Image (cartoon, rainbow, N blue to C red):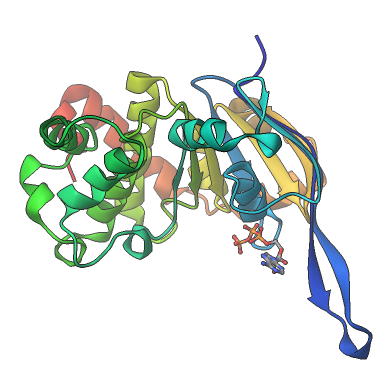
Length: 282
Ligand SMILES: Nc1ncnc2c1ncn2[C@@H]1O[C@H](COP(=O)(O)OP(=O)(O)OP(=O)(O)O)[C@@H](O)[C@H]1O
């Protein structure tokens, strides 16, 4: 079966100012190939500036690639018509680093999540109210948080709302760009656990962008390593971390603190969640 998402030969150039002689193109993503299978989490890792966000933005259709192809479920996403594009947007949902920026501070959490349903013309108002409560439950928030505003929630709770909004349309793929980087380490573990649980329960695939090898190790089935805009290595997570092939991957791994506090917390939280599912609550 073909992959859910297939990125082939992706190139992105930006025009950078170049003194008196106008601008010249700067290639920040260069011939990137990656795939995400159905229900799989692919970690896309690299240092700041390696081009991870640019790849994610191209996949989400937020910026046009300079060259290359992106197919989703076998369809070329760079030449979609209006209706097909709306369906693509329903099936591929973003989760960003800072959910605060994407939540309207004047709206209740319930309204923000319901808005995703409205945008995709899903359900009647009564259906949406039910669905919002269900989504809040899925991300480990009490139904009462529907009446809260973003400022009344913690960073971890807000990211759970961001995830609920992404899940609202029933996506097949979530593109998560540094979704835990702004959170405290202990909260990171809880939110990563939530991603893992959702992937298991809902079968949603995740393109998980992070600069943090500790985070990527524990969430990914496979990992693609990006260095200066090019892919240097792709491998199953266990293999990549046990036996990295590329010098740059080894350098990234050497920078992971030992013992890895995020990993240890995730393992502890997973054990606790297995013993008591309520332990996943925020
Ligand atoms: N709109 C833009 N115009 C010009 N250059 C850009 C633009 N967006 C990104 N870049 C440049 O492209 C390169 C890759 O940026 P990108 O944000 O994709 O990297 P990243 O790996 O996600 O890093 P970070 O984690 O710091 O965001 C950087 O050098 C950045 O300055």
